[in-house]
Image (cartoon, rainbow, N blue to C red; front, side, top):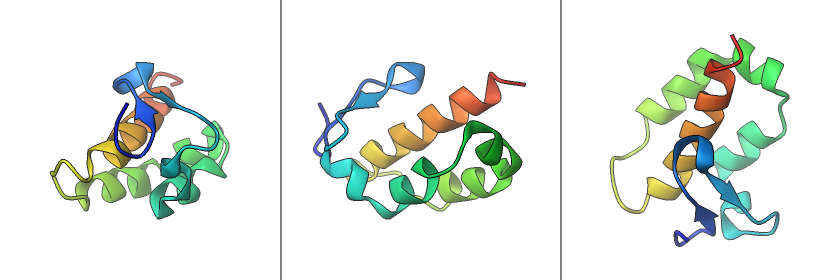
Length: 76
C-alpha cells in the first residue's frame, strides 16, 4: 500500500473508497467523470501526467492517473 492508500500498478491499481488519495486534487478532478468523458479529455489527462513530478511523493497519484489512462486507452 502506498502512503495515500493506493495499491498495485497499472490496471491492477485500486484503493479503498476512503483512502487518503481520494482527497488529492487530481483524483477529485478525474473521479467525477465517466470513462467516455475521460476519453474525450484524454489530452488533459496526459497533460496532468506530464506536469507531475517524477518523485516518490507523486507516485501514488501517478499510479491512479496511469490506471485511468490504461482503462480509457483499452476501451477504443
